[in-house]
Amino acid sequence: QAQLVESGGGLVQAGGSLRLSCRASRMILSTFVNNDMMWYRQAPGTQRELVARLSSSRETTYADSVKGRFAISRDNSRKTLYLSMDSLKPEDTAVYFCNFRGDYGDWWGQGLQVIVSS
Image (cartoon, rainbow, N blue to C red; front, side, top):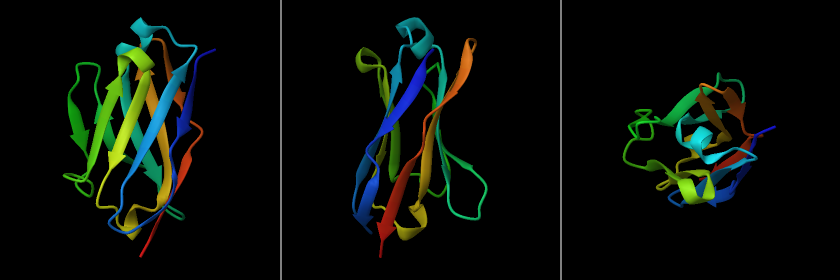
């Protein structure tokens, strides 16, 4: 059974940077590269929101609130999705989830807490 394992969250001061990773475990490469890959976040008392998307055709889209600060990318050799976050703001504080969606399934990571202190 394939699963997504997230790492890289934590506490950072405003203006700082973090990189989140989402590794696909027990997923064959052809399945990995044919997924749409997303990062979502959910702050306390709010709905989960889409932060960034990397389509199977390599197109990227971002929420307006993170454009120019966040970057989504993937490394096929490591079967890993990344979210690089720069110029972090306190309002970026949330639990971040990766999500892969494709013809063979819909997988979610376990969630990572990111706290940005002012």
